[in-house]
Image (cartoon, rainbow, N blue to C red; front, side, top):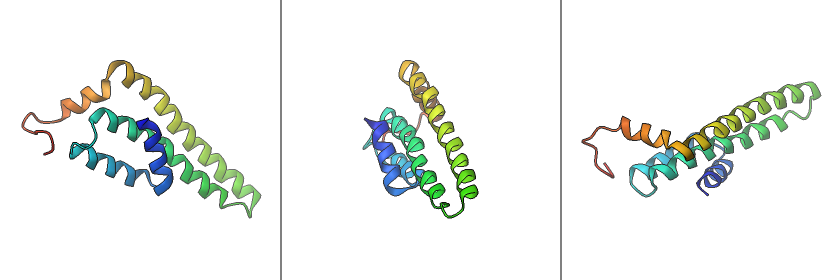
Length: 113
């Protein structure tokens, strides 16, 4: 569910950076768990594909320009999808990203700090 929330939020605001900043703030304030935040950010990476496809469609006036723009958007989309296709099951099975996140936090940081 968190993956889809990240996708939809990014598609609505058309900015994965904005969505990621909001998610980081929610995790920092303990409103969302770290695990949920990880999946939401993965969804934000997929959701950003909507924005570049919209931009590519804006090149409809020139056929060759549209072809190049759409090719670039497709490469971007595939990169994001393949990254999530690799990291999602890896995180689901091993919890690697969660443990990496915990390792980066200093021991003096308490929840909500």
